[in-house]
Image (spheres, helix red, strand yellow):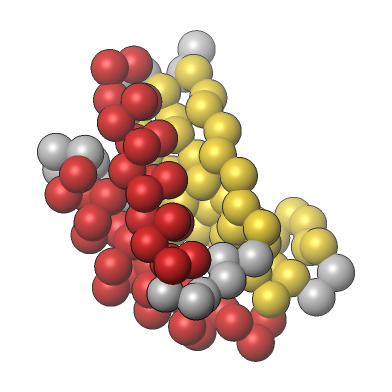
Length: 98
């Protein structure tokens, strides 16, 4: 089992718009593109990056789904940026359950 993580550093004044996009477009579209994988959204409270808050969206998956998630997440972030929105800073990581 794997955990695919997308972390976002979001400016305080952008959080409402970003969260609306995440719940209304990003999560549903990634779920559809991945064949039904549901993302779980968290706020990282152990650290802050200046005026930014840190959020994490995670999907539990098997190895064969990692590439699908990577492509779906990248595509949706590209669509978000194409709309003139700025998702601030983001990165993806993969963790393997032991």
